[in-house]
Length: 102
Image 1 (cartoon, rainbow, N blue to C red):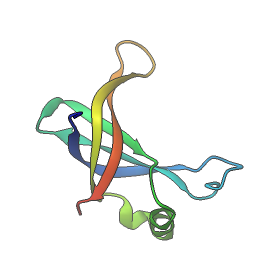
Image 2: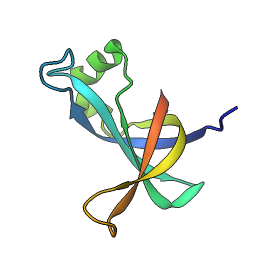
Image 3: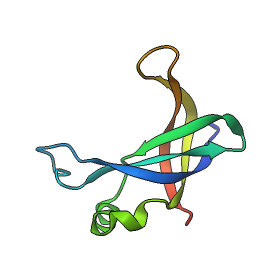
Image 4: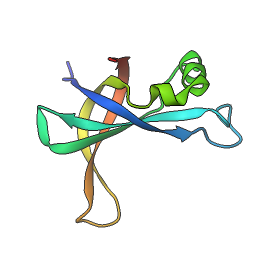
């Protein structure tokens, strides 16, 4: 059985759905960010795109109400994502499931 990592992260933004797809003009992913007691030295970021159509509709109806909410996400690993150079590394979280905390 594969171990799971669960963290609670804050909604900090949204990624638009790709043009010329069924998600054009809708939220494509929710951007999450935060820290976790088990990983105190890292800022954890996640892009959660595994949303149902109903969730997308609710988010699009009032994005401001969703910003700042805490979502619990579950994934199988933390990985580091390189950005501009080797000195600029941030932690990226691969989520599989999400749960609204507040």
